[in-house]
Image 1 (spheres, one colour):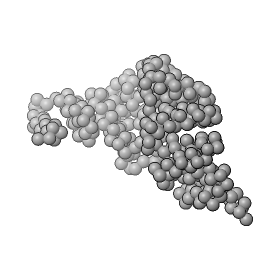
Image 2 (cartoon, helix red, strand yellow):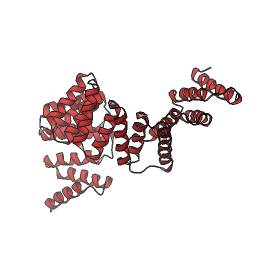
Image 3 (cartoon, rainbow, N blue to C red):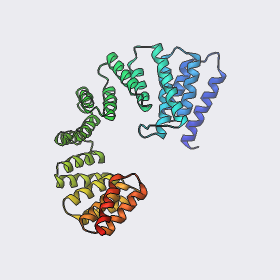
Image 4 (cartoon, rainbow, N blue to C red):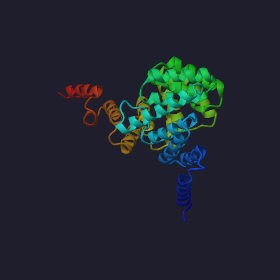
Length: 330
């Protein structure tokens, strides 16, 4: 029998056996089963087990947190980043997870993790004040929670409060100097603040720690590009492409840099590759139109700008650019 099928069958049998053994049943047995389902990624079944444990022992605050975690894992299977709107089912999952964390806090108001976890859920609901209040409370209870500084820093970054984001990321680094994501996020914050030298220092630190992922090289390449250090930028974009050939923005940024260097042939080559990967990416067409215009090939530039507006009719810069080119043809 397939070993994965066997594992699932054993879980089913144990669940059924416990349900029949009510006199000797304890909530801990359901918690153990819920943990096994959770660890195997079977979050719906984990929720069932944790719910039964809560029925048997409604004052066990830890189970509410476990059930909330399983609910959020289901939510994360459908969501990549924070959105302005969610489906009704997704919103209900978020509300239910908040209710579980809130119940855990009522039972144990001094558990920092419940506040930290509820803060994450609030952030996905765009209830930022409540999220910050929970992050702050978690840190009052446990001042050295690295992941709270990390998550609160990202929240500040998303709110555009770069100074506070930097404070939190540096605090995370103080707690764990080998925490690569904090350096990575510092690099992006400094880039947004136009502090490109500082950004490069932080991206270098990530690489020195051995985390040589495509997005680190892409981020450092952007910083070099803004500093007009084009050779270093091209080298980083090339490395990013070697690590992830499907990430189109490495090609788009490479095309932009080649254009600034006056190497229009290589710029078109890079942008063509980006368009081949994502034929409806308006940024790639717009940037290629800029290159064609510099090559004094107005028909091709116009064709690309028309494509941009076909994809996104609200692209104001493309419409103004197109109007200028058409005016010169008259």
